[in-house]
Image 1 (tube, rainbow, N blue to C red):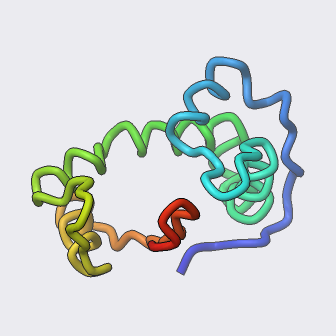
Image 2: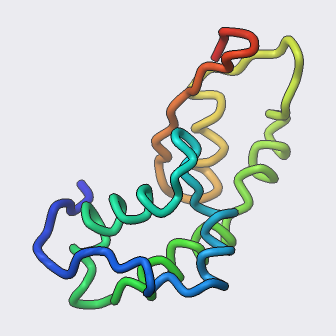
Length: 120
């Protein structure tokens, strides 16, 4: 349902000014490879360019950060009693449900295996 792979300007790292870069490192990091710049480039080139008639690259990333700030997912989950625990496990729907209720959007979540424990 989301637009992707539109024509438009390629990602320019210089447009992510230092203060914005610092914010994005907290709100939208590359949690898989750790290469934030490459991750942001991919997000802009795949999705951001589709918004270019309305938002330039800087605005796209500023709004992305602002969206993260407007919903404290950690607090949403905490209020649903979903907090880190050494033995407790939650289903995908257990986690999605309170986020969906609070944001009126259905999140897409992915699990990442913890190499230390070899579990998700």
